[in-house]
Image (tube, rainbow, N blue to C red; front, side, top):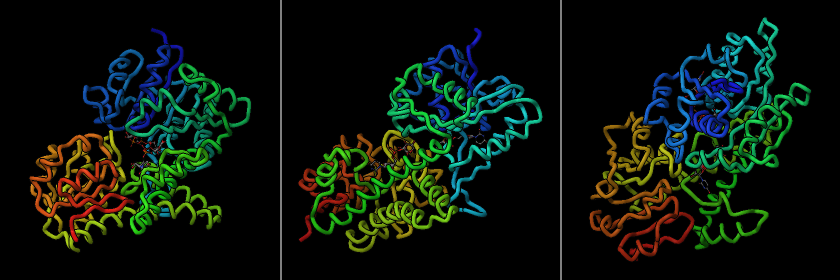
Length: 459
Ligand code: UDX
Ligand code: UDX
């Protein structure tokens, strides 16, 4: 079959994979190739066990794979053939040199740009899908201009707003699609070509077009605003624990104001995930590089508050368990950074586990999807940790249960069985406020919610 257009995505990760699967589903007349330097990842995309877990993803991949969706490591041939190239390689925080710990590490981006220059033989639209510092397109264009043929590359920014666990839903029914391009004739034409892809299933009114720099910066700012809400509510959870005000009541009361809105006001052990911390630190770095130190400090405090929330949670566990957890069995329910994903990048559970091990606690971890990643994250501590796929076994003889992820499965467990099998006094620290605290208290647990009154049997 002759395809109307050839789309290539470089980077078959959490963003590239699901995004291309949905484009292939909605645009059957386009051929979509996804390439990655990791053969292992590509093999997994071509198998029945995909490299990432997302509800609905498997069905779409199985439907389109081999028809108009292809996963391969063949970069050269695909760059040659593609009309549109989405770049979705990772952009981690730099770990070395200038800007270490804050700036984005753009080495994968740069090497991708060089590859495009090397293999391209016709005009192409290059789409920035990864989250990037503002004005990255400029650097990209400089590299692309080194091509010695007569080829034109038009760089467009089209950031992804999907959240893990709901990636397919977010792709199928996004609040908006953002496309940033130069305000030139070529830029407008490229912007329209990208919009044409999304128009297959997204109403025109939801497609926002801006200049390139607004689009690049909007992605960082969207994540910074979302994270800021969580840090704001988490800061107030600490105040609630001192005053007997209740964080859920406050979240409801303030969230009912339509100017504030109800979403992203769920207090937690802190936010995690691959984006929030990285993007805010990147924003801080950019602000500093323009000499905007007050702006940088303002946003950096969102990350500082998140670190505080994690360490405050651990301090609370130690204090309430009679100022020592040494030799005590503490069972973590949840290790992923949020429910419905096996991803553990920047998960608060990592820091919490390390801090508990540092206090000589005996840590057991249970998670429905994330144990494989947990073992990788904690490989240096492996001999001190037990991993258990059975929550009841994980809780046996434990002194405390610590809820670190809001998996709905944890609400369905029979806590009376768990209580009977635990050491007494039995503690439960609900870092996500998902359990029925009064019911647990009546069973005999000493219950420590977040941002709410604790319920204990101690006088
Ligand atoms: C994405 C975006 O790219 C990132 O900027 C954003 O902030 C978060 O989401 P994600 O898809 O989560 O990243 O990253 P990851 O799952 O690590 O996928 C990136 C893929 O690119 C990996 O499979 C990696 O092997 C591949 N890659 C990396 C290449 O194919 N070529 C490279 O040169 C570098
Ligand atoms: C985020 C953005 O939502 C998405 O638009 C962007 O493209 C990538 O970054 P993601 O990291 O997948 O997505 O998850 P998200 O649902 O935003 O949650 C991030 C963290 O915040 C999780 O650890 C979550 O548990 C926490 N969170 C979220 C809270 O603690 N409270 C809330 O009310 C909401």
